[in-house]
Length: 239
Image 1 (spheres, helix red, strand yellow):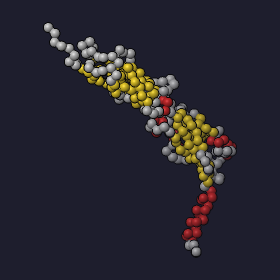
Image 2 (spheres, one colour; image 1 turned 30 degrees about the vertical axis):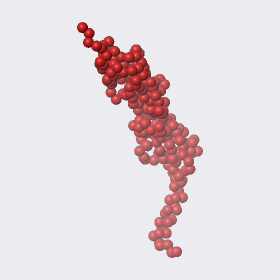
Image 3 (cartoon, one colour; image 1 turned 180 degrees about the horizontal axis):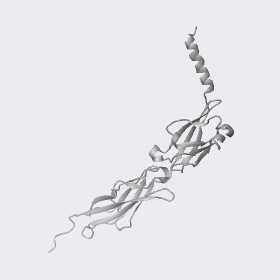
Image 4 (cartoon, one colour; image 1 turned 45 degrees about the vertical axis):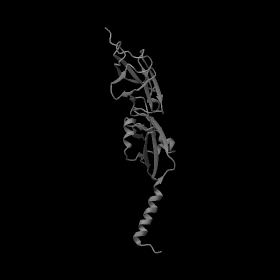
């Protein structure tokens, strides 16, 4: 099959480009905590990529332009990858269990490309928050001990061990708290009636619900629970 002159030139260009543009096998993976101060060391790129430290600047080693370049820089004197700008994990990845930033670096003579991945580790920088600072429940005084009432759940922007792990209820004589977990990031609480209510003695009961995360040290948030005791026809007319 005869190849046209134009086709031959394109083919030679493709071979030449492919021969000098070498994408390395594998991928270097680093980890750094979110909110790390600018200048924090992420890893030694020169050592991990087996590059000659003295040639980094001469061969123009650099992070390729991309959305994640803003967060990192390379010290060409030491070959170290550094945090350039504070990283907010929640802003980048929401509540995803994994948060990683992909980077690409190049070096000339010969031209090589390297793929890098930086895992952003969660820190306990958020407190549990309730949607409303106060919740009102209407419970009849005729309710039987053992009856359950759903309580609002708190939201924590952190993930894993730093998310909401438990709830606490202020001491009182009528209610206890039953905390249930249905996964690493799903914890709920129910109010359980322990002692019968008597509206004639106390028509409003005020409690404090506290959500606690698993950070070290833990952070917490509160919500007021107002119990309005509804009247039942439990008294006869008396002269």
